[in-house]
Image 1: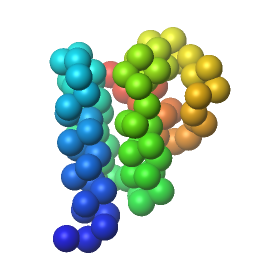
Image 2: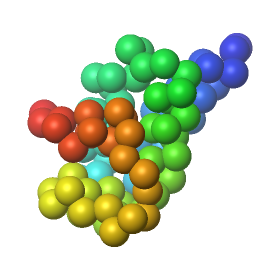
Image 3: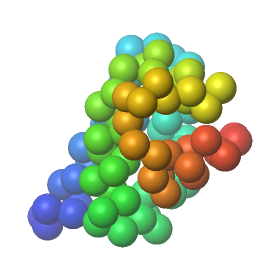
Length: 84
């Protein structure tokens, strides 16, 4: 298995097992929609984004609030616009 495929599997797992059902649904839906069209750099950005706390991610999703905790990039902008 390639490093890229391993990274994708980690992302899928991390997006599906967050700790709250709501975040599991939101993040896994987002990942399923976009993961196969992302570049290696975007996948790394997504992996780093998924390592943030749920409340940080949810606050960004609902309010666009980052509190300078992470740098905005293409992945975070896609996530902000994502609706399922």
